[in-house]
Length: 158
Ligand code: CUA
Image (cartoon, rainbow, N blue to C red; front, side, top):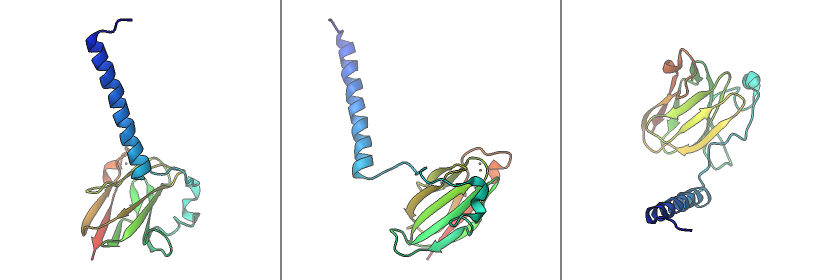
C-alpha cells in the first residue's frame, strides 16, 4: 500500500501527539495525584439542612485529618451560606459544597478553585490559603435570573 509522504508525516504527528497527551494525563493522575473533583459523595438535596455536615455551614476546626479546617457551604438560588467567612492565613482547608436546588458553580477568583455544585452531590476540594486578602466566590454556572448576584467572600487573615 502506498502512503503519500505528507500523509505519513501527518499520521506520525497524530500518533505522537496522542502519546504525548496520554503521558501528560498519566503523569498528572498517577504521579502528581490530580483527580477530578469528587462526585462520589451523594446527599438528598431536600434534606441538606438535616445533614450532619451541612446543618451548620461555615468554618470548622477539625482534628486528626490531613487538613486543619473544613469550610462548608450550602448553595441555593441565589446565595451561598455563609456569605462571608474568615480563614486563617496558611490554613489547609477542605472546602465542601452542595446545592439545595439547581446546578451552581463555586469559583474562587484568583485561585485554582473551580467546582461544579450539583444537587444530590457533595463537591470537595482541599486547598491552602497562603496569601492574605479577600477572595470573591462566584457562581459560574448559569442558575437563573439572580445568577450574576450569587457571590460570597473568603477573607484570609493573619
Ligand atoms: Cu448559582 Cu449561577
